[in-house]
Amino acid sequence: MIDNLLKLLESGQDSAMLRFGLGGAYLKQGDAAEAARHLEKAVELDGGYSAAWKLYGKAVAESGDRERAIEVYHQGIVVAEQKGDMQAIREMRVFLKRLESTE
Image (cartoon, rainbow, N blue to C red; front, side, top):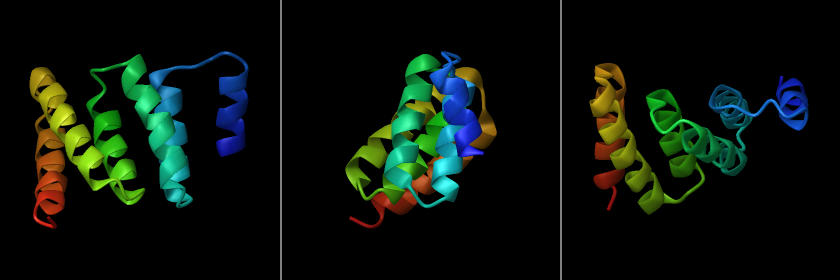
């Protein structure tokens, strides 16, 4: 799957959805750092993509950057609130609470 998505990216078809797909695929493979790189680009391309913010926070947390993950979740919650995406808000608040309680 990753190879197919990378081919699309190389052909110039960059998009938030494509980066979200790549990020999710890399995360499933256990490559959180590479996942975070693509998910960061996804939210750059579409700052209102709350699902990408949620997955970006997870990837950053799994890559070991707790402080950055907290920042990402805070940003993602603001985005989700602006969109009224209650499910994403709830999930990111749970993940954020877990990270903040490990201080």
